Image 1 (cartoon, rainbow, N blue to C red):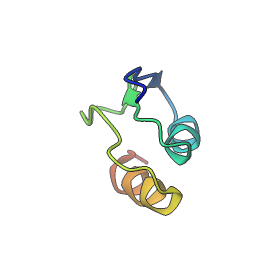
Image 2: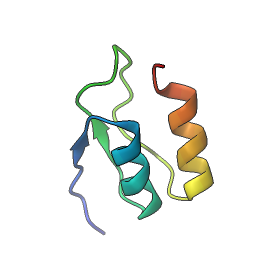
Image 3: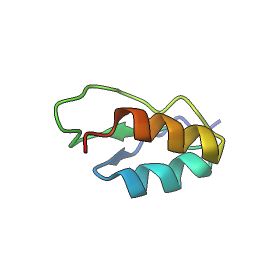
Image 4: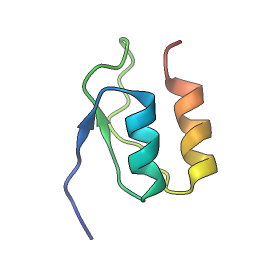
Length: 55
């Protein structure tokens, strides 16, 4: 299992990584601290990101 956790700064980048099953951290997250994306399925990634990404 790959333990590398890339830092990303956009929802699009995070979603692309999540769809490959990669966990991510956010470096620019509009003041919301969510250290990792604990999902792997694309629909779960979209829901997780939509619920937390500051719009």
